[in-house]
Image (cartoon, rainbow, N blue to C red):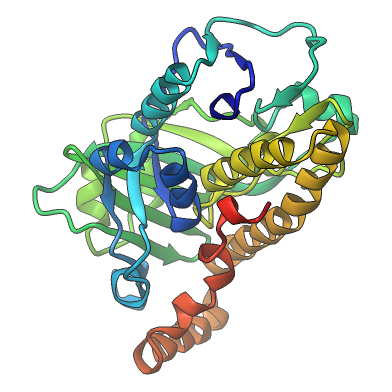
Length: 350
């Protein structure tokens, strides 16, 4: 928005813009925005390419492979540390003239010509627009941690699927490997991103997993844990002078690697709608109309993966056998199923 001539102020509660212990998979639909912002050279330096997504069973046998480099060679799939992406976005925003006020706790909703709530799953602005909503616990908790990466770590995202649990890992460059490990459990109440977890409990939960998982988990010194709660996509994203983007509008479970990507898409489309229409109310209505159906579809796909990764018994055996057959006989068909996701270009929709 600042690049388009708006005077922008960001009110940030944190004392500094940083986050530790988190990796991101950035797919080409978001990379197109990064390129349009003029940030590709910086982003390329801080990220690494993702060549494949590999699905394995809990003992390490390959179930399916999505060969990104082979079947989508013109697209950029990248792996990056969240803090490094945040740093280049902060620098670019300041260069464009954005005022960023850190350590700023918002206690009252500001009265400004346009207020954008990018304040996450516990958004105050969302409740202003939609009323109080109660998310429900999915019965799953997730650990996340960073460990030292092997010197020869392949630029591949790997998923290991077991009954009632799964683990995702990929290298981030700079000698780091990201791990997210999800387990079904009934006893959880707090929704948060940075609750301290016990590495021994993490290792015990995946003690029966094979492949590289035991060696990875042996290197875990600390981990955070959070409960996964399901939220609906907001019914009301705007009211003519206030708007929601990112998790404030459409919180998603972390099973499609699209949470940060959707926020990046939102930001571009919102700015483009406002630039294309001098009537702010009309522009904000158009923004919601363009974004809500797509985000709803992504959230539903993530919900489906939450089930598919954790299958048990005969259902699991049949599903894995089917995936192996498809991956062997029609290796490009699996990635083509996601063309609707990766072909989307936010910079051309307005």
